[in-house]
Image 1 (cartoon, one colour):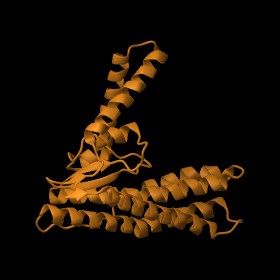
Image 2: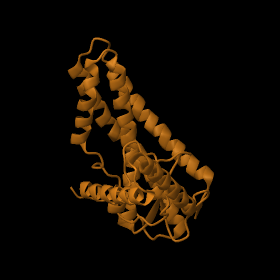
Image 3: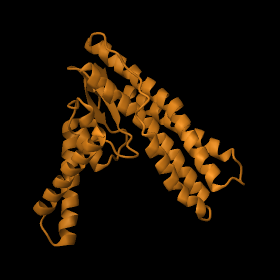
Length: 251
């Protein structure tokens, strides 16, 4: 199956729309309390709204993932695939903790808007996570591999590294190492003949090497060391980050 640039753009734009709906849902829910609402009321309203958004917009995001998954499986001849929707992707204890942390801004002058921004972005992020993680889990269940594809023209170094590997991911352990907050990469399932127009893993590998070398050069200049020393340190931290992510996944 060949996934066109237009197909990928439609998928990305659809997820952007779902994320925006999640963000607006939380903002409107908290703002409906009115100007006189206290810290506790706003905090609890935000927790409730984000939790509700996960149920509504997280499910929409998973349904979008299911459509792409089914299309790929049909094109690749995968026999009797099943796409399962999950309700345990988001850690609700962590959700509450993040909102309580953001509530510190409510004590500051004009901090209410910062609080709203933090909570609405959190809801958007959770929608994206539901989309990615449901694809990852279902690929693992059905024996498919998948690639991580950046959706903007200026992806971060970590996402470029992951994109450079192509369709090699096969389990949640692989994928969890690639997750970071506010990531908007698309997880694309694939079979033996799946290609994505404009997606060039080798090109991303070269880009990643350039990014690492540039960072090593700056660190060497600042620290009075060599590029080799700094590059080794960067690569070591990559490995440590992956180990921490896998440990989080197994908890």
